[in-house]
Amino acid sequence: MFKLYARKGAGSLAVEALLAQCAAVYEIIYVSREPGGSLAHSYQMINPRSEVPALLLPDNSIMTESAAMMIYLADLYPEAGLAPSAASPQRPRYLRWILYFATAVYTADLRMYYPARHSTEPSHADAIKARATADMQRDFEIFANEMGAGPYILGEKMSAADIYAAMLFSWAPDVPKLFARHANIKALYDLVTARPAIAKVWARNDTL
Image (cartoon, rainbow, N blue to C red; front, side):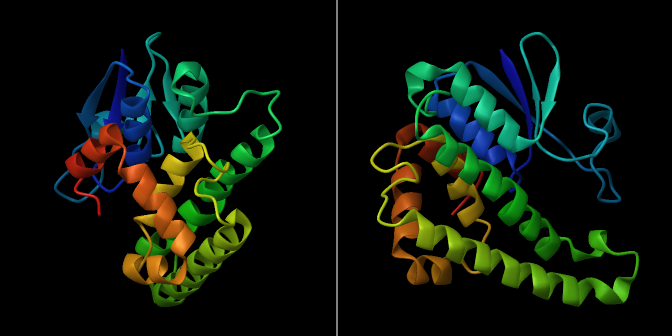
């Protein structure tokens, strides 16, 4: 059994959705916060960076980094059809966009919502947030232009990359504006979140 350390509004959303879509056996362990706002000390022993999610594997080893979990789990459950094989010509595109969302959009999101973490000078926070918001909008624009008609990242077939992307779309500073600007992003989001297993996870996490 997998144990996913999770919080609502965190990167655990996509991992939980993937586990559900793969019909994997898993347990959700919600990570609490201390009175001062930091994550529980017991969780910091699991992930010293105090970042959610973390995934406890059946052999009792720990994975961190949500994108790595998505790649690993999609490969582990090939019957779910959520990852092209290593030999597939679609594999490079699949990996590109998972890592793009992890390294570009995800990091911009963290700078946008937590600007004070990214400078030792409190007066920098507003400028950091503004730059991050602009970066996030640019990165969505790049993706929308390169994705084309879709309806999924790999064309007609949904993959783990689409689930990961859908999570990041829900973190946009203005989701209705994002969807109005990019019809293909909205279509992808709607298709992913209409899957019954994923819809249940979205609802459980109070996600748009």
